[in-house]
Each structure stands twice: as structure tokens, then as C-alpha cells.
Length: 358
Image (cartoon, rainbow, N blue to C red; front, side, top):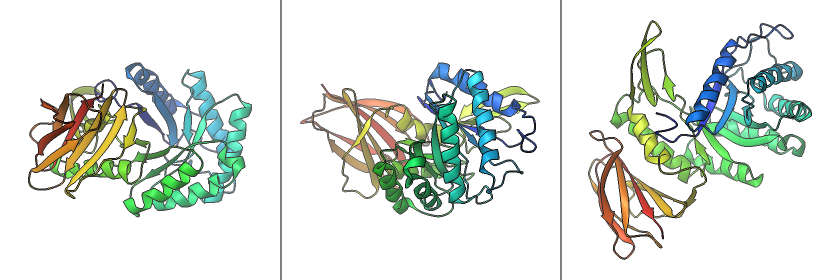
């Protein structure tokens, strides 16, 4: 459902603490091994980009002992390599602001030491930093690493989350920082327990638009692809188990909103300029091989008209739309006249138009 049908291509594999009781002690890789097994299986369905990410540090880890953390991380990555899934990326730490507020200097020193160790061991793995909980804290920690060329050479992506503080107005500063050093910018986590209906989950559609247009991010990740312990609504696929036996699974509203982008705006596509004179209608556009994809989000309580002109377009546009009554529904194609077409957008809807180019 995630990789073959929704065409997602990424996973951030959560590495829970409890692998090592103390520095130098034997390591229990059970939880990490199951994450590696998931990655290996998901690659058969279309997973491309994967990166382990420690959720929190081991209790014994301290900011004045970088070497012990680096030893721990190297052991984890060596383990994954031995299992046949060498990570192309590794996130140093999930939300260092939350994880006991480990300072920016710690992150810098880890990147330098771990990067050196990885190269010496024959890894091509790049590091993801800072994976912080909001764009404000992420900027501070990212600068501390990227301003040093000795650390920057080991970084593969700048990552942030969109919790607590900050706003879309903070995204461009991170975009500029990443672009300065020719790095991709990833938004690697968000979720909300309020997403329990199509109306409340519609907020995620708006956030994706803001991240892609205001932030010009290269990737958008949601926290939970699926969650298997109980029925949840703040995940893309909700699963229910009964004493270890799968009883049911179903896509949530988030699945449909994500699919309006992920099924049609594929890796390698580029965002291009588009304008809308209706502040209630959020529109973004992307070009790929021989087609243009437009995603229109109507944030109004009322239907809104839309007229789009696509230079160099073909003769018709495929239409896919999500409303509360019909998620990811294919509609009748629209014919283009003078490279333009018209449509009516239902209230609180997301509509994707796929326009071929000769």
C-alpha cells in the first residue's frame, strides 16, 4: 500500500534505545535488526531512500563523550551492512532539542568523528542533520555543522520537523542554507492525533503545499506509514492486531491526501512556477518526463472555479480528486482548448491534474 500503490520511496527507520546498557557493553541488535528486515523487504516494493535514525539516546550517553556515541553508531551501521542493507544515509539523532537538548557542538563533533570513521571503514553513507523538532532549532544546529568544511563534507541532507515553534516563514532560511552548500532539504517528520477525519486531516494537505512551495523542500515525510498495535487515525495505514494476529487494515484520510502528491509527483520531478489569483486555492506545479502535474487545494467552504493554462500541453488532462466522500477518485478527463482547461474544485478538496506534453 505504501510503496507500490502510493509510490512512496522513503523510510526513516526508528532505532529505539536499549541496544547497549553502557559504553563498551555487549550490544543487543534485536530492534535494529527488525528495522533492517523491513527495509530489505520494502525495497522489493519500491523503497529507494532509507536511513536509520536513533529516536533517543541511550541513557548513559553524555554530550562530553562523543567517542562513545560514535562507537555505538558505527556498531549499528556495521550491523546493517552485515545484513545486506548498507544505509545510504544515517540520521545522527532524532530531535536533539528534545533528546536532552544535546548542544550544537556535540552534533558538529559527532559528524566529524563519525564521518571520518565511516570513510575509513569503506562506507559511502552520508549523514542527515540535524533532524530537529522545528525549523528554528534546526537552523541553529545545522549552521554549527555546515559552516565547518571539515564537517560539511560528511553531510548528505539538512532535515527538520515542524512541531511546536516556528512557521512556514522560517522555511526559506533553511532552504537558503541547504542550497548554499548544494544539499537537499528534507522535512522528515510530522503527525497530529487530531487527524481523525477528512476535515481535520485536510490540514496535512495544506502543510504539504506550504513545505513544497514556501520551503522548496526536496522531500516530505509523514511520521507513521503504518502503526500496528491498535487502530490509529494519525497514520497513513491503520492496522489492528489481536494477540499478534492481523484482523484488519485500512487507509486513512492521510493516505489519500499524501497520494494526491506521491502517486503523480515522482522522484526527479521539478517544481515550476504557477500562480493563482484566488487566495483560497493553493496550486503547485511539477514537470516530469513528457508531463506536467498540477495539485490544487481548495481551502474554502465553497466550491471554487479554476482555469489553468499550461504552455506546451497536450490535448487533455487526467483528473484525480480527494473529497470526504471520494478519496483518490479518478474523474473524467478534461479537454484542453488553447492549452487551457477549466474545473470546479469542491470545498476542502485536493485535485491533481496530469497533463501530457508532446
